[in-house]
Image: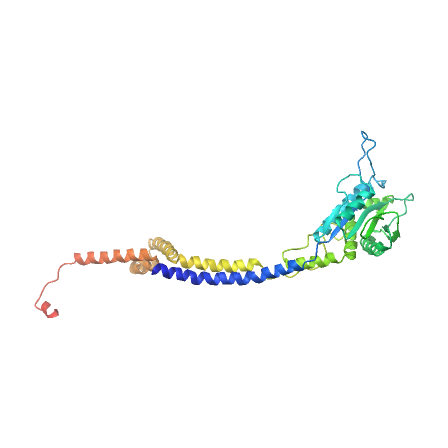
Length: 367
């Protein structure tokens, strides 16, 4: 009977725990499943770092295309690759899949770059360059586009880059039609000429990491202005997964910036709170199951503490000497049974040692 009672008690305690977990997790899982079904497809962007290749005297026929060369030693191919990698980091923080035409210092021809962009199925294609001119006083940023289909994208990119680079003193020179470049790409295509390496002031600015990060931020802004689905998709994913946060990116003129200046979604009831409640109820179940052992351990510790205190005399010593019988109540069932048996045996032994009473004529009257 005792085992059946214990099993019934365990069932009565565990059943609410199971019900609570099921009720708490089911709405969360349903919400996440619904959000996953409603999530828009991932946006793809292709980035093209201009020029590339390494000079090799042992192989003079190997293609080498440094692009513009600054008086301070900067090569366009190196700056373009660094800026493109920074743009990729920013876009990936906004959950964009980025395809690079090159991610190392190699030479590639224009048809190969165009083919990579078309095969990627990208929403937009951005080629990143730095300008050069015979007059070192000429400077500024300009965005080139191959035809009317990309004119709107070029204007958005020019505005975004101009806003970022204006505080640096790099003026916005707007957009320009260049109808002999990128004429075979299937998506809106622009070429960003962020600054002039032939201009000593702008070339010195481009030696700084924060300036290159600012260029990357401007290009990221222009892409997301052209493809608003990037921001919309990130909002949906963040709402479905409250633990997702924008990845902080260090650099730029503003110091540490997030992938977008947008407030994150408020976290809903997560799995952590459910686990806390379930853990608390689980501890309660364990405490009920081990109540006898816990009581016994507590009783032993208390007796030892009172025993140490009783050796010093005083009120505690007198109390424990006068009332030692209350302590066994803190033991478990088995210990209490043994103590009762030992106490009964001691009483019987003391009674047996008492002297026999004197009999008198009045003893029969009590019968």
